[in-house]
Amino acid sequence: MSRYQQTRLAEGASPKTINLEVGTLRAILRRHRVWAEIQQDVRMLSTADDTGHAITPEEEAALLTVCLKSRCRCLYLAVMLALNTGMRYSEIRLLRWRQVDFAGRILTVGKSKSPTGAGRVIPLNTRILSVMEMWTATIPRPTNGALCLPQREVWRRGRERSLWLHRWRGHL
Image 1 (cartoon, rainbow, N blue to C red):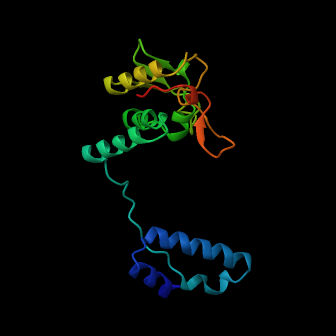
Image 2: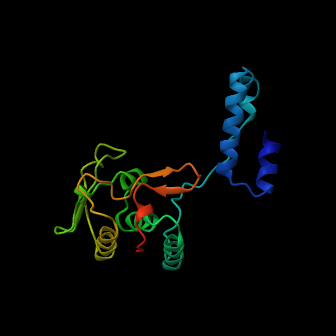
Image 3: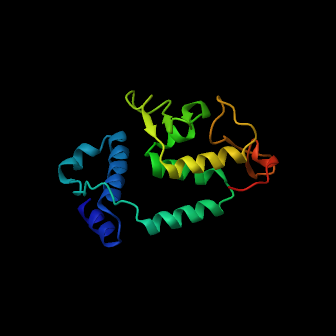
């Protein structure tokens, strides 16, 4: 196993990736009741527990430019929400208009990964507030119960479109 790990390191794989691969092999070998024979000879590689790096202004600008060019018009809003509020993917995906208070400049999180995350109030900065106001101007009659980001569906012809954007020709 050590030779495999060293070979993978030489190929440029990260220690975490190699540990995941070894974990998969371990599960297979356990299933066939042979892991115990080699277990004492296998050591997982040490990994860095860093959290990554903050996105630079240049990286953010490049990301937002790509989002604006995307066929999915709600992608820009989703990324802006993530950048400006720190909301999780599922919180953004399930966000409804009734959770957004434009006058109070706040957003109340609905269903969340953790019980303490649900119901938390997030202040809206000028940047995200203006993007959300522009978004509401481009969609037909948003109702309080409607999702801020429309759910997607795949049509018979294989093209992905939202339920209502096929009627709308405006841009953000």
